[in-house]
Structure formats: structure tokens, C-alpha cells
Image (tube, rainbow, N blue to C red; front, side, top):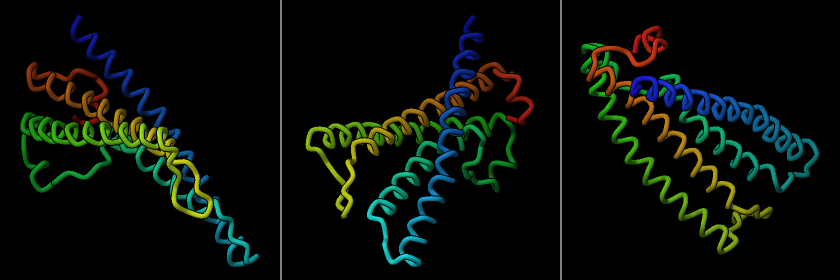
Length: 180
């Protein structure tokens, strides 16, 4: 019963993170188009749009922050291979649990600060200090979502590692295929 519940949680997190990660990846070509358009307008037509810099900044922030949990899911973040590759799977799991714990602590702080900044942006009607001056509330909302999503992904990964440490077996069959 507990194993099935943990598996269902992990599978659900995998699906949600994948959906957000693939959604964030769609922002990259849009970002490229905005930068291209702004560059062409500036240098060929001597008419730089006031919105391209801020839009590119927001799109980059969205893609990077919302893609963080997806990168974690795909194990694309950096680790210290010189130590990590030389130890047993149980020691790797211990390393992972320690690093996930530290990352979760950091992300909880980011989430708290993002919620605070989001509330301030709504309350005081914050706008970016630029010629276009777009509102900032959506950016802080995105950071709330991104930090929560990344935290949930790390919790999912921690559950998988703790299950392995306590039982000696993999919680998910897919994890065995990936070598985790």
C-alpha cells in the first residue's frame, strides 16, 4: 500500500514536471524570435521596439526557472563526478539525500521570498524600471511556481533514494533502467 502510494506520487510529479519543462522549452524559440526581431528593428530600421528587451528578459527567466525541475528530473544538473562515480549505489544515495535536503532548504527560502515579492508587486503595483515598464507580478508568480515545482521534484527524488536506502530495492522500475 505504501509502496503503491509512493509510486503514484512519483509518477504524478514526473508527469507535472515534464509538462512544465516541455512548456518552458517552447519559450526558447519565442525568445530567439524576440531577440532577432529587436536586433533587426534596431540595426536595419533604426527603430528599436521598447518591449523587446523586457520581453526577452522575462522569457529567459521563465525558461530557465521553469526548466530547473525538468533538468533535475533528467539528471542534467552538475555533480562532482570525481567522488560520485567512485562510490557504491548506497553512498550515492546518501550523497543525493544530503544534496537534495540542502537544495530543498534553499528552494523553500526562494519560495518564501518569491511569495513576499509577489504580494508586494500586487499591493504596490510594481513595474519594471524601463521605458516600457511592464508589471512585475507575473515574474514573481512564476518564481513561486518554479521553486515549488523544483522542491516537489527534489522531494520525489529524495523519496526514491530513501526507499532504496531502507529497502535495498528500487521504488520505480524506470529508475533501474536509468541506473539510479
